[in-house]
Image (cartoon, rainbow, N blue to C red; front, side):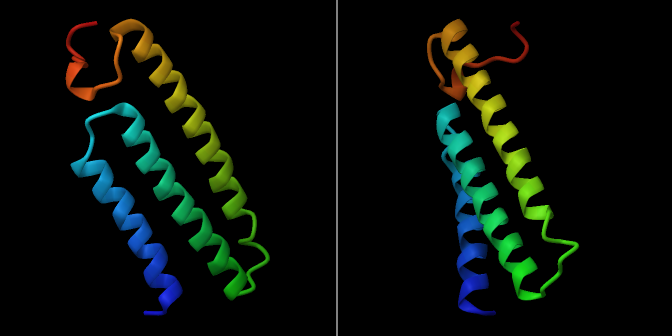
Length: 98
């Protein structure tokens, strides 16, 4: 395993562990998701450059576009949750009580 591969794998795993273990606030969960998407984007871009796959060079840009859409939807949910419930703590949210 090369050091570059190890660093992006560890960055993705750190984001995943942060998402699973420290999910007290919605904002921290969204930041962990963004870190995971960023590490996937950089790894995918470096993989396309390493193998010189010209047909695969659009995949990192497509992933980045979906990541931006995911971030905007997450922030919209964060604002809506903060307005209706007064906080972004995930323990205060009850999906059964609409």
